[in-house]
Length: 400
Ligand SMILES: *Cc1c(COP(=O)(O)O)cnc(C)c1O
Image 1 (cartoon, helix red, strand yellow):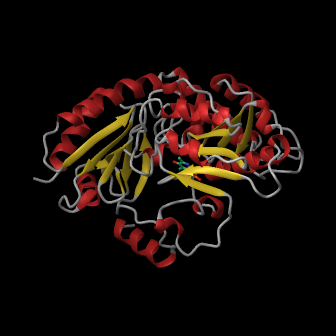
Image 2: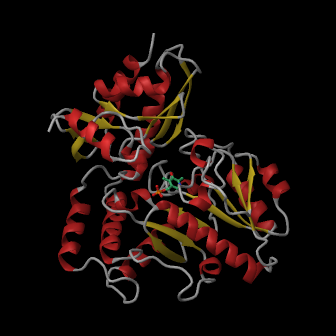
Image 3: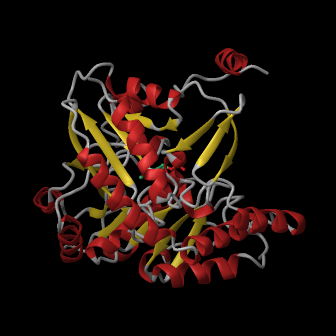
């Protein structure tokens, strides 16, 4: 089938909640993907950091196939032999006390919100139904109703109301605003260590440390959404390590399965997750043996194949090379590890979308965030010569 036919069939039968680049992919390996016409592209999006380990990693694939041959789903009504080792390995790797497995990232966010509220009523002693959770402007935590209810992006939020109450929005990167927003009813502060969808917005140094201190002082749960920043993307296993902090809850997803399967998790200290008793929360697929086997392999290769260190060194190199590009359209290049953004001055010819479309014709796939920012987030297995290849194309694709 010709690639145009895929487009028209999608347009005819599919909901239009995405506006993809017109490239129809059917194969992937490492940092590379191929379209139905056999053209090869470097993937600089990595499915929003879900394929940090590279496309179709052979060891994760092997774990998937072997587990699929044995047992895929038990529900949590029974135990399965993959869940215990998954818990243990994940907790040991991330220095967590406890873990709660879910599927999509936003389910981990919802789980954290539920736990924080329950903890607020039962442990902190907040008056019934008065719990407040503090979040940041320009946040992205997923697409469920509760979560878009506290988004500040009109497009994500408009006409989906009425929304759940109990959320308070403060500026990102401003620890003073956090302290001011806290009341006796505050149960949690939910924040991304680096705002991904907002355009790779890095908060001032020391912000997260300060935020954690404030949370501790006022007995407020500190929740870091590391669904995008986590699992090697920023050059550390978790971005929280850059500031040497240990939040009460850390949310991971995306790369937890290396792109094979939706797997997410809430990592916690004992106190918060222990508020849940049997029957109070769950998911049919959460913690299933196939998910656990895939996640175990995804974590294993991340560590064993030094992908985290590679993200740090290649990220530094990529950023430095991008900074060398002399182009009057570039407002800023910023990033940490392989989570990089190039921001254009407003009104630059065609904006970020046009540059992404041009890069596609040059064999590099990436995606704009908002109108002026392009994010570069290749799989963490990228090599120096691949970075050079990408930077050469990026510099040529910029206008002028
Ligand atoms: C992608 C993302 C989510 C949502 O994950 P889904 O798997 O799409 O539900 C939540 N938080 C952050 C920071 C994300 O980048």
